[in-house]
Image (cartoon, rainbow, N blue to C red; front, side, top):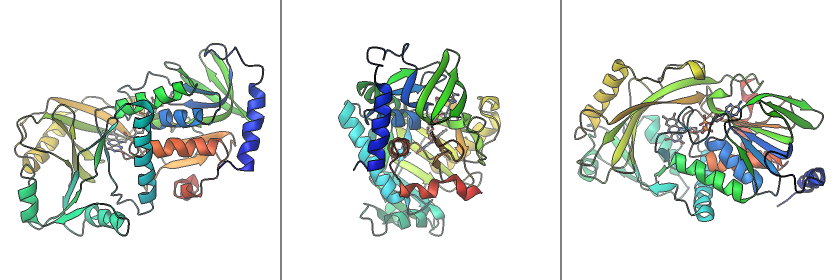
Length: 396
Ligand SMILES: Cc1cc2nc3c(=O)[nH]c(=O)nc-3n(C[C@H](O)[C@H](O)[C@H](O)COP(=O)(O)OP(=O)(O)OC[C@H]3O[C@@H](n4cnc5c(N)ncnc54)[C@H](O)[C@@H]3O)c2cc1C
């Protein structure tokens, strides 16, 4: 429900829009109620939600998302209810699922496909007890299988002696490029302007507005939402312990592997997990979760080394023995990590008109629909006590 505080802010902003009628072509308008900079998964969602509030809204990106230079490319992202990172994610995930389905209904674009998910590990592994913690008391469909049952059910997967297997049938694959296109399409249909290949060079809070400098002049806005992915660390002017980490993955042709294949998450000696996801067109992506090299986003290498390829091939040979020996493709991508793997979703402590979404920590895509709504709420003065876990004050 719209609060008094929110109504007041919307009234003030709409009075600022008065006189702008007829000048709202993207080239003419220089003041917006909200500007979203960074139109990856999080920013495109924030743009669609902000546009849905009846605000004048602009989205800016230095490239043309979807693209392959950030964190969102590569055909598939896992979505599941299991959140070993904390049981407080369960209601958040429910809302995220709801909003992804709403996006599909609003745009007619399918972004989510149910594929099922299997976690196999010793029962004292966080992957297992964390998943079971998320399900407890929450009416989330799942099964716990012993080794024999799991081997019969998932013959393409090498389940090891002594492992516990958890199956979450509602696990899905989000199509990242399509999700970004869908959110941008929805934003446009709600009146948003989008400028791609236009980077923000600088931002400044001046009184109750923010000035944004680009190579094509200065824009002003009542609220700036920054969702900059791995480019965030040097632009937010927030002392956050963000670390950009390069990840690599292989995409296998699995047309000859009898399925159905599911998402998998398994223990790894080199990283936090070895995981895989069936993609459209009978390919299967495999990767290690974390354990990558770190550095400034533009300086991280995009070539997968022979040593890295050998490591991943070893996991595939061990756990997915029916897969071909060589993938079709090797690719790199980037995580932007916080130390505790929780996100940063906040009003900027030193710039009251600025809203920040950062620290995807390699798990942020599935939450993008929820995060877009949450950032739009913060931008329109709606209180979100459920975001307390994502405050930067936890690093103080
Ligand atoms: C290999 C890999 C696998 C993953 N798997 C999963 C998964 O299975 N499930 C899951 O939930 N998550 C997963 N993630 C994480 C998820 O993809 C990210 O959390 C998600 O993409 C959020 O980041 P983003 O798309 O907003 O960032 P980005 O794609 O990096 O978007 C940020 C945007 O900001 C723009 N930008 C930055 N600075 C400026 C500026 N000054 N001016 C204009 N534009 C600017 C950039 O151009 C970019 O387009 C994975 C990530 C990787 C790399």
